[in-house]
Length: 232
Image 1 (cartoon, rainbow, N blue to C red):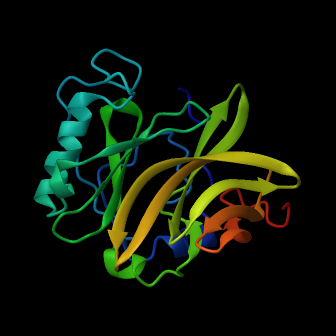
Image 2 (cartoon, rainbow, N blue to C red):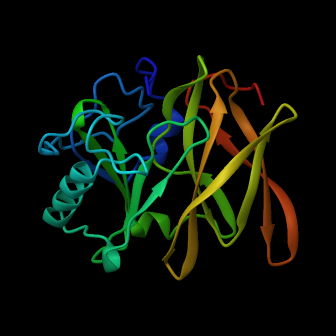
């Protein structure tokens, strides 16, 4: 898929990345909204792998050789997946999926972004920081990434919910579906990562329909990677 031009990093996304660590080269032309400051770039070094969509891709859209390389780097960083478990987070935009896992040794939740040129960027959110997040509650998780959906610019985002289930998000009377991607226990609370795709022209406080023990309710989540503030 052809991703959009690099987007501006916003203060919001940068704040969400405090305490996150990353490895892997930033993929050229990826349109990632933010990469953590102090990122250490190390090559993913997949053998004979091109951009997604080429030969050697797995059926789910994350090249097998690239996945092996990502996990080899995770092992070197002391962040191998707990029980060897990884999952793919897909998006309604049809963009390349993300690879997610929880580190067995640290409890961190890590996300590998499948980029152009056979490389990947891995970002890990520190378990200690995740444990301080509101419960119940939902917020943006790690990076927002720009893509195209039938010629229209959109943002692929991840939400992290603790102690509740997210059904959908909305802005200006438009509903946007979420996909449950990954669940792990952090700080004694079940945390769930959801993927969603929102239009580039919208930004601000999205309404989030959630379900908790006492029933359905609505909260807000700030989603504004394109710096459009106040549209929602």
